[in-house]
Image (cartoon, rainbow over all chains, first blue to last red; front, side):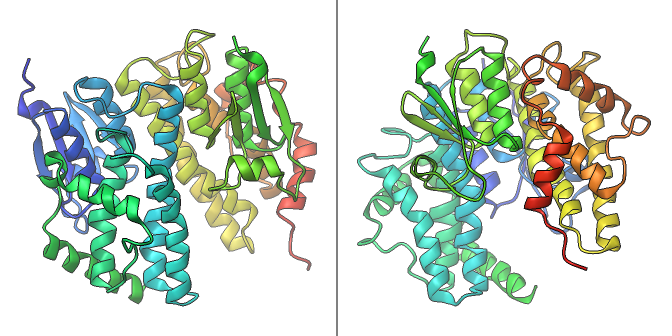
Length: 224
Length: 227
């Protein structure tokens, strides 16, 4: 039974790793959806109506049901559309995927971007602290094609939208070699593996455009 | 049932530890409680949670699980045939429960905590106003989620009840500290009544710390600046 496009709507922002990962999940499951690009500065009445609590993207609307917060949306998508499972079946593996996904968004994201931009203790220490966190993920990838094993899963979607495309392009713009091959061989191999996955490569923002966008964010952070 | 195989690293005063203990009680799981000493971190804690070095940590068959909400979900899934379900069965209801639990931790708790750390009357007043506004959101969430039933989860306490209810001890302590009612019977009547029901639940009652004991501990954690 095909999903009618209008039954699923996604409010997103092209440069947001949080909304990109939802698109990856929807494409992975073969779900048709209507995409509504949002201005995250001048927020639309629709966005404010659908997500009054956080006022953020992504927001998924499915048959009138409204969902916010990317991790929850991914889990909802996984439970609603059964093909190409995103989360592992085993409760312990599931707990680990959730744990590392939280770590990526709450720790890796801020420490590897905002803290590096601000570099309050100097750029060398900022990079060292960022690399310390990334090392945890390097260890998790040892001997695996993806965090999910042979195929991409929840943590690949979360880390895969955050690290190679959002963070890496910020580092490129700032001319920082954050994850050199010799220090992070597993992570670099994972990034190359991700590039071969159609649903991922289809959902990556344009490289130069994203670098330009992230540099504007860098300026805003520096001025704050 | 591998009951001998479950350990929990925690402390009597921690909200986040209480969440795990309530979940274990709901599923009637026996476990060894490893009480951490305030001010120090045990070898086992540091080894089991090298990333955050924080409690609670559930160790099941020698495998550690960290982060309170993740532990609660793990308990629900690993012992799915024991006791009541902690998370709702429908995907949308699960998402809503998780959404509000995330709100409790990311928005509501931060506001509550800032009352204790406020410097001066102005900051304290602003923090109180923020808590009241956010508690109001939770009152509406309760009405939506409970659908006329006694708990967020319906007939039995569940994930969101545990996420918010575990704060009730500290909620009272902050009220005392601020000298201001923060769970108001007239402003948030549904939550007010829910709180009493939650505290009386058999899975919760033996775990909720005494307010005076907790207030004394709070004074250690949040010392007031010397005049």
